[in-house]
Image (cartoon, rainbow, N blue to C red; front, top):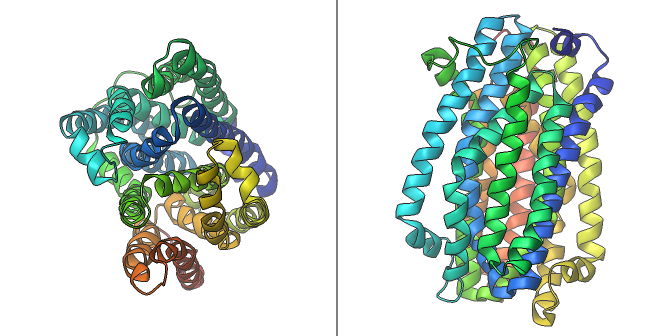
Length: 448
């Protein structure tokens, strides 16, 4: 009980660090794993395998998007119910998360395996990279149910007042993954298939760790009879709240698909590999922001449910300040050290040289992205699904897709138009977020 009631009592800044720091550590560990995974594949399997991993990433993100549809929405709902002290519904949310994740992940796995190659070709694979991409994604899809449950339970752990336990689960997955990667890729000569298998096994071990906490009879939110039947009200409300990150992730995936195809048209597989290197860099810092958002989410949701609106606003403002500081680091790295960053991933001279310019272009807008991400998460945290959905779609659908298709037609070098579409859309979406936020603050304290 004390783990949840502290959300409405302790100083906001202390709470944010208490909840965000474990999430940041966990998300940073995950992002570092992704870098290590890319380094192993880039050096152990070659530049084409690295390009294939870039092609496969939006497919993986689509699979993860269905997990966020359930996990993020349900965890926000759990925090709100705990703030309202409706503990019966809070426990039912936990049971519904498991059931919904199993159903959705099974559907995604079946559909993905049936149409695997056509999907990968549509995402930007070529005849030279399809083999690597197919081998990697086949294993990932077979483990999709574990992936969904892993992310769903981690979100529930944070909202239930156990950010450190959630962090430990993630670190367990990352450490096991990093240990297994070189064994499967190099020692057993399994290539990209070995990298995917290491991911699935590590998540299975993490899920085993997570469920121990929810079987503890001393926990306020735990597994027990009567919570497994899908509740229409809980299901639809959780899906409505989770629709914002889901649509954002789906839109992001389709944007990456369009970018990959534009890059393939104007540059080829090596340019896609270049984009993959830049994505890995930005992913590290985006994961830190996601950690901040995960720390903010239960605090904002609980206090919104408890009608302590001043604490919600304070939580948001402090989170924005920290997020901006984090993105200042990637701005400096991308603008002043692009060659050093690229050399971490590959020893291919051609790939290194062609990555420097686009890295500087893409990182030019990093200072405003933190605010944009936190603003969207604020509305998700307090159950304002409509505004959260709108903000999640502005960057991807309203701005980035039209720009990435149009700018190459007006640039002397079409590939430059693809690169510049990213920071321009970031700037426009940040302006949109400011407008929505200012208009919302006037009525922020209205009841749900």
